[in-house]
Length: 89
Image (cartoon, rainbow, N blue to C red; front, side):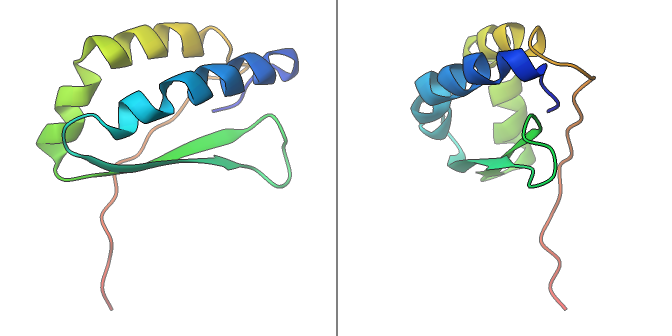
């Protein structure tokens, strides 16, 4: 997520207020916030979910809708999201 530089603190406060709610959502194993080393206004959330279905249930929840509505107005550029799986070699 690429935030307007003057809106980073607003996002951090929002994330701090909702992190525990997200991590306690059914199926969520953990939620982390990562910050780019090169660009201080770019952040990533990294969350582990029991299944794609649990993640989709969260995306359809009021918690997500309310949080996303407050977050997306802070962006400088469109956000991207990926779902990935661990690859064993």
